Length: 269
Image 1: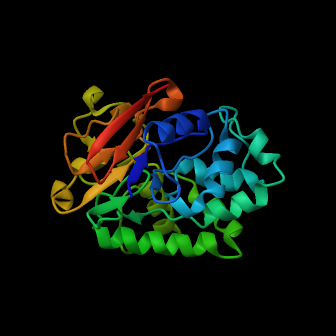
Image 2: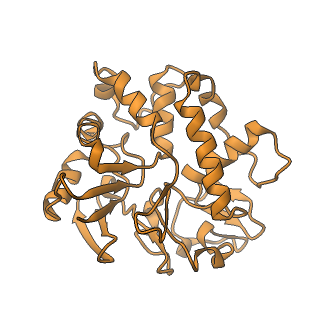
């Protein structure tokens, strides 16, 4: 029995197939853990969800920003991004059940050995693990509810950038979704910053730092696995902070992490 973690699939089903074949994934005893952004920029979003849905007993995933945006597009609240290749999925007769399956997925998962957590983007600067657990559950309950569509428009926006217990509920939800699914850099004071997507090595603003370098003691006892940030190319300089999005959809490679053996396999695009 093995636990395999894979970075953002982005609708690259052939890459997923190659990765699973490489590790000889056994659907009867192994578990596939995914960092979210299951669909969107690749050409096989429908095939990707077909596979994940049909193997959901051995698949665990968190939601990414592309997955959440897809819920808005599928419910005709937002227009499809021209860069996304979602038409086959949006036109599929299976669309309703895939919408329901996605909105059942969490924003945070505990690792199977209880050594830490998995999310799409990361752990918000001013949060402890307990805060992430609480707000993940709150959002999960809303997405799982019958009136979840009413909530979707409130996901969008870059503000608030700083956590405050006095924020309105709407702003707390918006901040939480941004932290779980869109965050990369923050300021030295813990404000989220959404304009920079490059590698930390390319930073020119000395006031910015990667979210995982803010209050680094939070990761002494907890591992944190995440995707979302392809330009990191897996480099965090912290053995407990594991970046798994390595840009397969952009022509780089898919990273497979075997948690049980603490081993990595790279599948080239």
